[in-house]
Image (cartoon, rainbow, N blue to C red; front, side, top):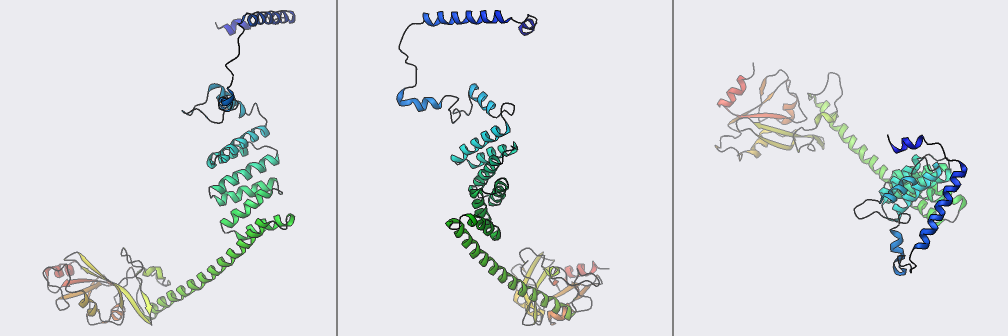
Length: 385
């Protein structure tokens, strides 16, 4: 059985017994002090090092030990400082604010934010401490260039204290940083209502109005440019419709969208069909199954015979036997009837695209090139029923 349990069974001391015990302890303490050797006190803080020695005391220390640990006494004091049972909400919020201020002073802004946030979580009923916590957190966020959060915290501070000039000024600066010019001007005008000659507010309004003018100008330029691009896109779509070209992705009765014409070939996304002086210019893909090679033409005019494009390709560097030429090959496309169709090389590209069974896939006319009469051509044709 523990000593505590034994003590709990003892009857409580009477008042007379308690007084007698105190007197006895006082007498023993006096006897002990009188028996000590009389000598000069030399263990105090030296005059030239008193600040250094004081900083080691748990009540005054501003940093932890080199290994990051607090002494048991310092740790106990810290726990006491943030114990909700030992502090009122206002005291707790104030303690966290002081902690945040210490880190802010030493430019540890993220730690400062943590301190202010803990103070806010206390939910004190004191409007002034809440305004101060939000304002200080806004300042830390501003230093970290978290301008959107800084604006939010500044306006929260103003909700507790509308007369908090620092919070309103920081709200204006934060709003300017994220291009919320109207908000910036609104906060500055409220400051000027009470301080008509406040230079910082006047400068912020001037900067906000100039940037707002530039932004509106850039938006107008973008609108004009986007409109021109859209007109060009519409012209391309209309030209395809007028020519009667069949688009593979187009549903029956659906409208043609330019996104249907984006090449799927890696690196060729920008080589979309375009309209140049009324002439459609198409990207073309030639495939050589025998060699597993391809050739990509970026812009073939619709009014040019396809043989002229092939003459620019041959002789091909991959054709080690030098058997591919415009006189020795046939080219095919797969039609809507799921059969290969032989192409007349002397036809213009535009005439091929409007043939009865031709269908445009992935915005890129594609053709299979095979040596005429070769085993590869025979295998290709036999693959179709």
